[in-house]
Image (cartoon, rainbow, N blue to C red):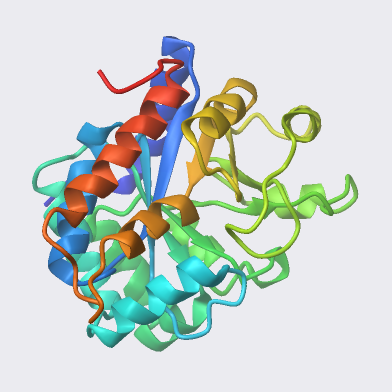
Length: 282
């Protein structure tokens, strides 16, 4: 069995990034999009392409916090028969070749509730998952999933937004571990991006409240965007722009065209080069 999450892959990765003097690249893809095999090829290729942390979306039929690109990715995966147990299978497969890159599962509570929260936490830990982002569980509901996850050694990562004021932040940051995910713009994912100055100010404010690393996402679309964010935060989080590369590689019938995974990974290499302050991939 692979190394358990409680050995601290996320913590070690951010320590390594800090020692290297750079921000990280967190990449998001929906597990099973556009189909299991293509998704597997992409996920297994992400570390070599330069992803420092991998966020895997757990497909759900009503992803209300996500924009059109990630909503459509969820529906494509579900249409191809993706289930939560298969997401964990994908993580197990990944761990056979990579025991260092952190994997965070991101999604909604409904599929976890249906699976059974205690069983899910145990199975996720055993599969090699390192952390969870569950966007529709507020801190007031910590006993549902957050506390069992922490007890099992999984990081529980929270979202903070521009409207999370100083009074609310302590509640958001209580029981948070791994890193804090700062949503840099209001609204759904992948639709607009924030100005660099606003991101810098927000990150500085968060740092006054927490010593955890801060990843910034929503609206990062280019290597230049990623470079700017990673220069002020601990990591840039890119999701919709990667998912859109998957869409660009689909045929008229929705099936993946040859070479789709390679093109997606090429884009991730460009983002990684941006985060590392280079003009292009090595």
